[in-house]
Image 1: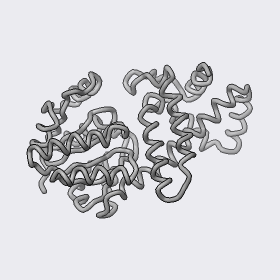
Image 2: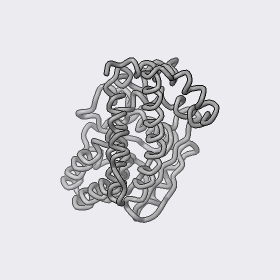
Image 3: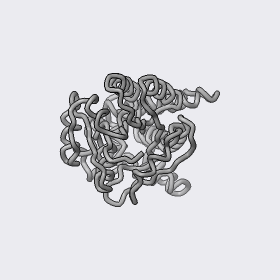
Length: 292
């Protein structure tokens, strides 16, 4: 399959950056902004994306459609797209790139294929590919190799297997390690401040776990406006682990922590509006001072 037209839904922080990479490679990148937020419309406009209006028009125009959105919306969007596929009888390759459990991806695959479409599984690991930042798109499924055409110097494409669910599985395991560590570290640091031992704990961590401490502190400023998206991701990780006989409770707790952040003043910012001068220690201080 020769790919010329790619749909990206929706152009949020990650989706916009991926769309820009694809445009720079020469693809015609489209989106459908009917019913989308003012922020999504602004990001799409800034990226120079072609707005085709509706999902029906997107399926009619594109050979590939990437779903890059809040994981809580992934299944609903797949259902909407399946209806559009059934109506126009087109067969674009639908690629779910969201942080969802393999079982959720299987449900999406069933909806898309029942409507006559084709589905691939993808997991994004890394930051939005802007500036010098690089990210990796893990893909799996029978048609995953078609997606190697999307690779750029800043967006690697790694084919895992022909099994639907493998890309989601690696995203869940990596996300559990990465965002689970951030959740644990943040809760510890907020607790230490509320207990009045934060300075002593910082000294101890710098003596014995400096790399981990620096990693967590460095991640906090970027995390806060994304916390609302990380809540459903933690629940998808919990679902993934429970399916293989492990406790889901660790990541239910991480979801609770990110829900607390999302409800704070910091959590109500966007990646574009957040104070870029705010450091990780400032985040800990502000969250510790939230009413509880």
